Length: 97
Ligand SMILES: [Zn+2]
Image (cartoon, rainbow, N blue to C red):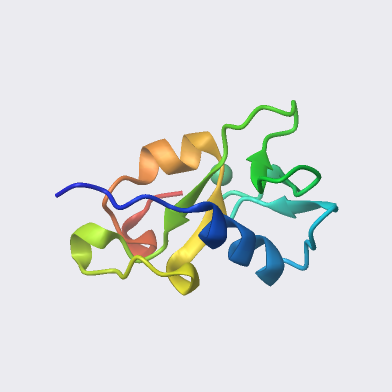
């Protein structure tokens, strides 16, 4: 199954959910491990950055698409690179700490 693209519009909507408006930056936490993620909406694009300013955190489907999760903003959370990589198509409840 091809992964559907997470569009800029979807990124912007997730940022709004965290209270980050256009022209702002906001520090939030990885949904899974609490690592710092910085939302940057200073430019045209909405970006999710790690503590070193790299665009490594990504949006993750809480309920994996593999298990029937929907490709909608409500199912997207920011996750740091290591959480995104280690989670794969598992549900959060199945993750070991
Ligand atoms: Zn994390």
